[in-house]
Length: 119
View (tube, rainbow, N blue to C red):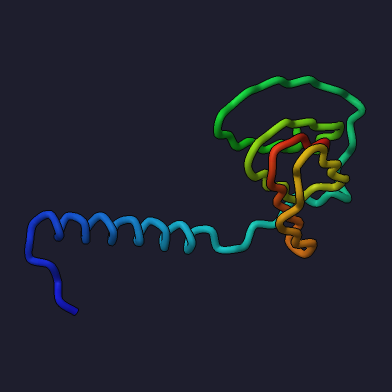
């Protein structure tokens, strides 16, 4: 393997090596694969909350609050792709929306198009 001799190329190589080391270190410190919460020990709440937000590009996660599972309906209008993971429920598409990917084993599905999803 021939190493670059220009200073900028060496800087790029050092940055790439540093990023690779960080990723490798993160993988080693993790130790185990992520395992989701044990749903058999969690409670379901009948509380209802409302949330409105608007974004051009966004990502969000709905997490349990202590040992209480989140419950209720989520409606979203979107254009593009939506990844849904670890859902215990159903998805109802409206408009020009289709399911592009479904993996029951890993609990993931991707919806694509322009329309609305009710989860």
